[in-house]
Length: 134
Ligand code: HEM
Image (cartoon, rainbow, N blue to C red; front, side, top):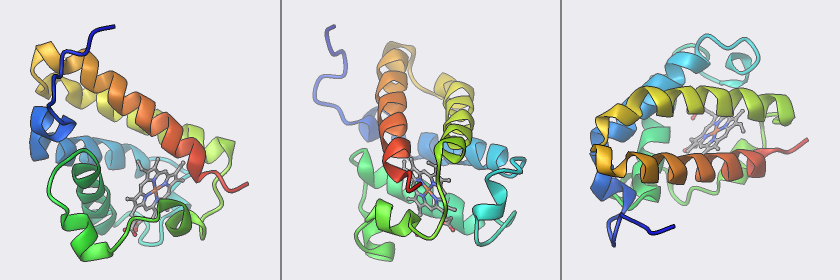
């Protein structure tokens, strides 16, 4: 399959607002989730968690490294170690992320929508599986 993105990073294609909106839609879902919400140390006050995930994704996809400056090296597996993450938690997390992608992908230029969806979905599925610790 040809890659229509050229050399553009996902951040260049999508811009910072897309990632902020994606994470907001995602956390709106998390806040209704009785399996996942108890895991979050700040409970239903997700302001900080929203900010951390958005900055992480912006950095990961080629944007500014504000996450690194504020939080240091991501070391995601280590940061998730305090939370019990099994297949059920992974699936709930991915369900909210898939819904958030579907909800916000319309903000992306139509030419790039399929490319962005594929990249995001692939990365999220792999990373969520990597966060499993039980
Ligand atoms: C597999 C299911 C997952 C569960 C149950 C989970 C749960 C959590 C929890 C409870 C936190 C703490 C919230 C906070 O920041 O206050 C957290 C933080 C975080 N998660 Fe996840 N997570 C999962 C997967 C992922 C994935 C796939 C990614 C990356 C795409 C990710 C990225 C992050 C980031 C960047 C933070 C903030 C780290 C920090 O700077 O402290 N998580 N996660």
